[in-house]
Image (cartoon, rainbow, N blue to C red; front, side):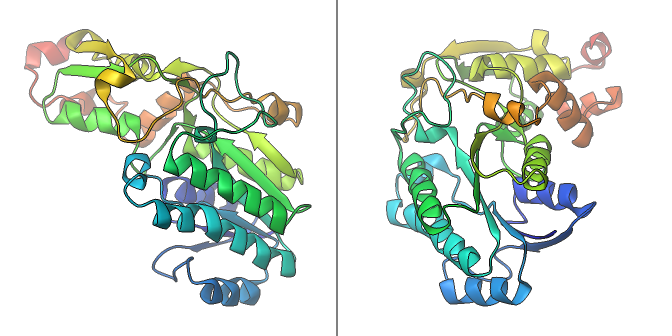
Length: 304
């Protein structure tokens, strides 16, 4: 297949470019090529390329910042995907849209299924739900919407990276939210799932995520434990209200991945994904600990 990846310079876009390179003709597009908010430029490019599939990884993902710029967020996240799907309808091509757990309000007592009613709490969540509606309307029979959550990986901002950077700055006391639960997802594993979905000709909406439902606090413990530094830190659980964020987050946004697994696509555990992430970051070797914890004494490093 000839596949165009939009947002190719982002975390998921990079992972997809690597994943699709073996076995497919993959073409990346990002801000340096043209503005996706310019429908004429996007149409000219895609019509010239005539791809079999277009995967849209481009999005405004700064959830709190989105509260201050709702119109820009709705344009980039909500309207642009609908226009891109309309272009794909004329090619013809399959359009893949990346969705989010933040379209749900977090009041469920079980993992969210694909057909559960959305009720987004934030500007970001509303914009991503708008995208889904527009994509389905523009391309009802040739779309694949893959919802995911708590994405982390090399080449972009993520929760694990934020913790590592704070360690490198010498911080040893952490407060982490413990009343939001979800399913962390490693970008290369999500990319592999998207590739498999395209190769299996999946259509419709699917949830994807690594195996394991945790709170942010539990995820932090997993990260510090995998790095071997948990017992050298103070880790305190706090509530969402204590932490204070501009955008409201769902308290429970775990996604049910049973539909994807029934299609023969299963992602590894969160623990497995973290190990591969740290290896990709060059943090697995014992010597790398010195780079993570530069202010620790030699005796403390030896104890690790």
